[in-house]
Image 1 (cartoon, helix red, strand yellow):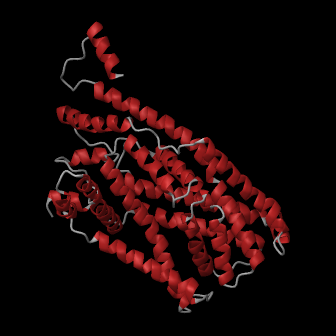
Image 2: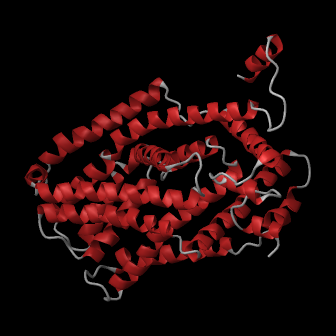
Image 3: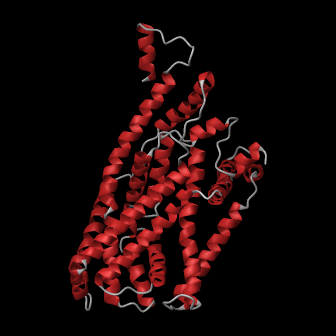
Amino acid sequence: MAQDDRQETTCEVHGPADDRRELMAGGRAPLTGQAAHEAAESHDGLGLHAAEEEMPRVTVTRRRAIGFAVFILAGVGFLYFVLPNLAGVGTTVHHIEHGDKWWIAIGVLLELGSFAGYVVLFRAVFVRGPGRIGWLESYEITMAGVAATRLFAAAGAGGVALTAWALRRSGMEPRLVACRMIAFMALLYSVYMGSLLIDGIGLGAGLFPGGGSFAITIVPAIVAAVLLALAGAVAMLPGDAERRLGRWASGSGRLAHLVARGVTVPALAASGLRTAVELIRSREVGLLGALAWWGFDISVLWAMFHAFGSPPPFTVIVMAYFVGTLGNLLPLPGGLGGVEGGMIGAFAAFGVGFNLAVLAVLSYRAISFWLPTPLGAVTYLQLRRTVSRWRDEQRARASSPAPGEPAAATGPAGATGALQGS
């Protein structure tokens, strides 16, 4: 395959030098002399442009802040005052404090394992060799992103935006960030859809223990199969799809401008999906982080069932978990309320005892939702300091002379130049 074709089919930076692609991917290219300086200038120019970006923030108006506070207070009030007084539920909720402490502690450790898997997957997709993004920086980016995903709605869009921002601030090309973000999400949610497909068919056909109706087993499996097929169709788009679709964007009107921006989406999505496939084919060990992310988190729910009684078959826990997490799509902070209701309803559909399901799900959500929140708040502040350091490094590198060139003049002229570069 030609060099240009390869760049169009996977997440590669368009440029003549492989070393420049390595720089953009988070690693440092083994260049020396003038070539190294030229590559660094190209990289730093991009980095300085990215350094002007502000950290994505949610516009907090007084009305929005009051609304969010009212929602949190209403949720807490419902859990602690209304729910305990409902017929048949009050006694159940009060039993939470009597759960097996050892199993609850195991659940916390399993949740930490889930976060570790997320960090490993992040590095497998975004980090190429030594560079600015080490293990500590990877932890800061991913934990801050997980916290944003937990606190904001829209299926984790807050976490995606924060992660993309941090990667751009590290010096990675925006298009490369978008492409690899698609690859990252594809790898993560292929486990989700694959589990729904396999577990749903297995339960519906009686191959797995647990049973379940057509609606709770086969229907989710069909939805997963359709989404996987659509992803496969997008991945099969030709490498020059953007150029082909770009013919429809000729012109100078507003419609042509919108079309010109829109045609990049399918081509970028195809490149990201093909990159995910290439990573799988390369047997990248870090991709096991996707299995760890979901597997350990599901195991927390399994541990909570042990803490309060006898768990249902693990295949039932997996299916109810994935069906319930669709509540994250609801416009609620972290899917709070929607996920709990979805999981409890799914377990009820499988014939699991209502009281046991309530105890296990609420305990699981207490760990999975609230554990990353304080950690994410701390790493958010750490990440701000990290990107500030990256910005200072980029500016210092951009102002340094090339090897063999005379140093900047000292005196008034040099001082003026220094002020202009600051």
